[in-house]
Amino acid sequence: MDIILVVAIVGALLFLQFGGKSKKKIKKEEASDWFQVKDLSEDGLITTEDERYMFMLEVQPISFALKSPSEQKTIWISFREAINAIPHPLRFKSESHPYDLDGYFQDLKSQAYETNDPLDVQYVNELEETFLGMIEANKIQDRKYYVFLETDARYLLDLTTETSNPIINDLLRKNAARKNMDQDIDAVRQELTNSMRIIQSKFHAVGIMTTEMNERHVKQYLYRTQNREIAGLVTLDEMIEMIADDDQIPQSFGKSAYTDEVA
Image (cartoon, rainbow, N blue to C red):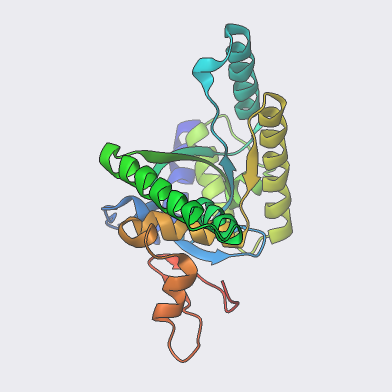
């Protein structure tokens, strides 16, 4: 009887999940297809097209090789403790981007102009040309590291029905999540914020600094990631100005959502 009951429950849940029809899965051809932004809040809370919710942290890299063996051990322990303390999925991503030294050399040029000495200006221009030439010749890239803290309806449900069969438990979660897609967004934000504080606390304790990514940070990240060929030449603000029509802020670029506010 137990086997028959299990089969009946699985069959019923599968019917509810797929509506009695088989759906052909669409192969995701590009990495960006796995990350489709539906909405982006001012504080950086991302809602994806498949109803996942994310916060992002940018992690400042450290020179692990220069740390002593005891320091390396402490870092690994802290990293492991952070992962074990998070109750929902985490994703870590490393990306390479061209070095952006424009801001640095603009500051140097401003200081050189203030001296009213043509030799100072010439020196800064030659220094900029030398550095940019070295970066181009050696293909030097800037490494950026990110943590994605992710949750969805299934991780937030307080299920009262549990069985000894993990397959049935998963089906129950999916079915319940589908019926509760309009969950309290504050609970989502609080859950991810708590996890973000844990990550930051563990990382900062061993000298690894992080930056919470708000709406503007996320937009800049998406712009750089999805427009690698031109992002180093044209900033996000410049791109918006170029493609805006009649002073209207564009609502999206690629698969990333904008709001009606100025970016």
